[in-house]
Length: 111
Image 1 (cartoon, one colour):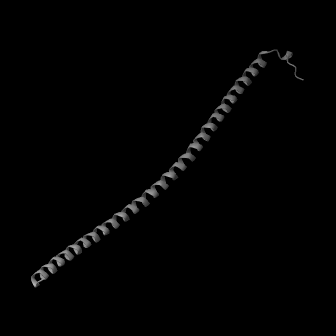
Image 2 (cartoon, rainbow, N blue to C red):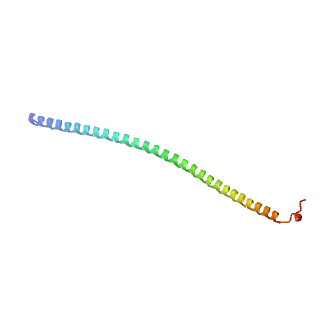
Image 3 (cartoon, rainbow, N blue to C red):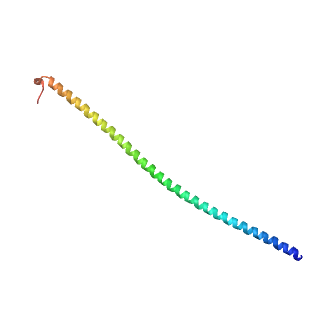
């Protein structure tokens, strides 16, 4: 091997080493970008977890509200029944009072 060939091989190897360094730098940048993306994705996952927790809380609250509504409706039905019974009792009372007034007081057994 003469000096010219040796110099060419050194230049070629230097060029290859330079290209490798550029590729290593590029890979380092890509790795940095990937790490940033992973960090962003982890942040999004945390945000989604928080949203899921909020939704679960809303569902729990909705279930409580539904139970309260069912109780309210049930109580309203009971109150309506009581109101109807009271109206019916008033009618019965007024009719029986009218009947007593119409009847001959001498026929009433007051004992």
